[in-house]
Length: 274
Picture: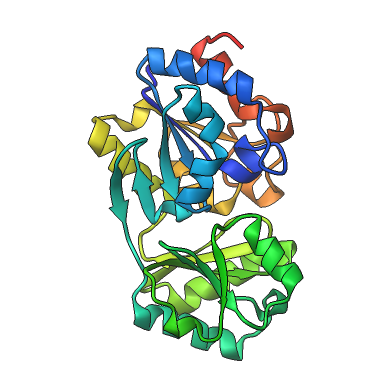
């Protein structure tokens, strides 16, 4: 097998818990990958700045990470921005207006993910703001979301975990002609520009590096990973993924996320030292 790019989702996939991963082991793995000219891509619903902070210890040790952030709205190599796509003001207004008459999301929370920061309403409690700050950088509370002076990559709602797919379907039925809705883990549902997902974002990197589909390996656990899991032959679903994902994809990583399943599978498939 010839692999030139490996992309992994973060939460529930690469990360064990609370932003954790085996840093020394991953540094060793990444060095071996770089010696073989294999690119590693952090592909996540998280923002670019959050991902860069997450991998700062690896980069300081000489590792190079490429990024698919905001579920595909942002694509960057380790040293160059390649692609950004934003929602229009009219699209954001339509989504916020929809939420005003469908206020079933947790605390009626609306999260706007921008280039310069993350924005939530003034009505959000300190506890809710602290929750958002776990996954989003530079969180600001604002009086009017439509007055935010930033380019917005996506809109996020939070629902009870077991209701996520129901609301994804509802949003796709409402906005599917011009927007894309996807579950992103921990009860969040992201609304993105039409056609934006991790698979289309990875294609940007493939075109940049001249890499074929059968030279790509990917890992994921949730519906925002589904497009890339279905596109690539060398794709691995985490054993800890929910049942609905196992009904969509049957090739699994060697272990769950809390047991470094991504790293272990890469080592085994590419015959690398642990």
